[in-house]
Structure formats: structure tokens, C-alpha cells
Image 1 (cartoon, rainbow, N blue to C red):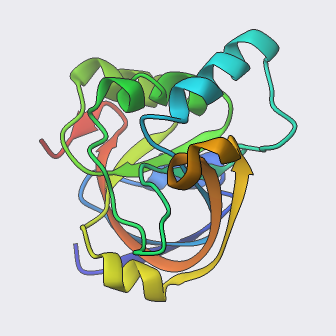
Image 2 (image 1 turned 180 degrees about the vertical axis):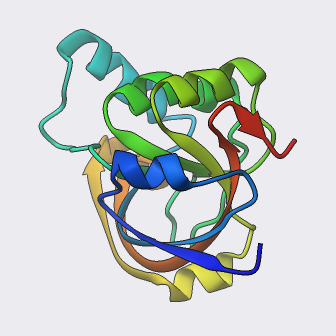
Image 3 (image 1 turned 30 degrees about the vertical axis):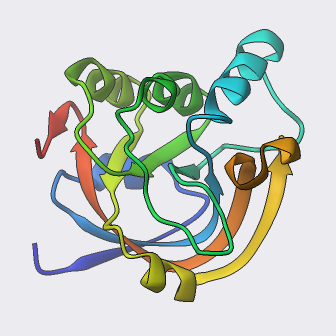
Length: 169
């Protein structure tokens, strides 16, 4: 695909319906960052309480990464603790899961059922650092760089890897 699709958060259901596997996207706005240590905690809280006042996932992005002084870069999204979070987070409003690696067919189908997608982001820590405007801890501060963070980003590059029951893998 030649054109790049610019996306800003919050992301609408209508926009997600237009995205196709292989689309190149640039994401701007506020996004959440979490990986293996924090995502199971968030999912447990959502399952028990139905919501968490510290975070509003409606139309948001969950980037599978830790946030450290060295920067941000994608971690493997197919880790059990991460991939098992896709369904509940999508149900609570996450529209794009952002990471790297192949995910299971059943996860692709669950994303489709929740009108969410998965996009892969190249491991380009230096570029992402330049495109990160703000960073703050949202929840689970005791986890340090693996706490839930929120970033304000501009033009984070990604490629849609799973959408509408299809995958690039």
C-alpha cells in the first residue's frame, strides 16, 4: 500500500472498520504502555470491578512495551501474559494492540469480535523516542518501568497485522 493512514486517539469504531491487514498507519495522541507484569493486573481489576478510574481505554491504544530512560520499543505480543489480555482490554475499549510477533488465530478472531485490531511496530527505539512528547505513570507505579504508562506520541509508525479475522502471518 502506498498511502499512510494517520490515526489520532481516541479511535472510533468506524475507523477500525476501514483498516485492512497491511495498511501502514501513523498513530498520534495519548496511548497506554504495558507488558507482562502489568497487563494481568489490569485485566484482573477489570474482571473484578468492571472498570478502573485511573484509565479510560475507550478508543485507545495499548503498546506492548516498558518505558525506561533508554526509550521504548515493542516486546513480543504473543507472550501468554500479554496475548491473554487482548480480549478483555478490547472489550473495555482498546482499539489497537501494538507490539511485535505473530499472535494466535483465536486471538485474531477475538479481536474481530470486539472490533479491535493488532498492529506491529518496528523495533526503532531511537525514532520512537523522538516521537514521544510526554510520559507519565498511570497505575502500578511499584512496577517501575513495567508500570502502566501513558505516552503522548506523534506519528508512531505501525503496520496492521491482524484485522477483521485476517492476519499477515
